[in-house]
Length: 313
Image (cartoon, rainbow, N blue to C red; front, top):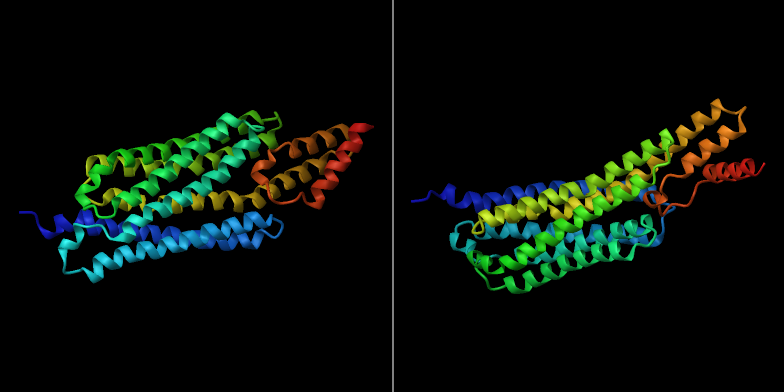
């Protein structure tokens, strides 16, 4: 006979751990959102509203996760039969995750569109994969109502399709961004170093979400009758939101790093007009799609104006 620990561990224990990690990630989301608003005075209103919408959506999801934990661990603490039927909040969380991921992928697809100079096939493929993930998530939510936990196997096709679309979309976004950034190299050491940092950001954008989706998929395939796969899935949207906010908050650091590098170079070559121009050109050749939504500062405008004047001499 199975002990209570062996019975509740993969169910309540998994939900508890997944919920705690999810709440930690939400705390990081709040910190990153606060940091963004401190640095976003020059961003477009659309981007500010978009970040606000993501935070509101993530906050609502925290209450959803809180209800899941409260339902199973407080209200039904002495009712083991409650584990047979998934509570409504557990099912609705799938839609929240799919909507959140769809919105963030849309922003990354926009970056791919700009970096690829309007590659319709590539960008359209990314959006199609994202839309597939969204539709599957909503469909799973609708069909899961009324199903017992052990009946989730009847949704296995949708669950596999949902995970496959999510995995492929995240990996494709990271690879596409890295590819087009790699093609943007100029041969200038400072510029190429900055591009390498941007490529690293792109890899990190998709890596954690790919690993999370893959782990959730594997655990569902191996153990579909417990909630370990769902505990891993609880963190997916928050990982994606934090990856997106990290790229936004890194823009100022990247700009300042590039500006300081140029300033150091310029101070050493004030006697050479040619070197002055080339250094400025190298700094301005960094892909601006990663540094978007902030108008060019006065220093950069002066440098570009001087560069054009020098090249015209």
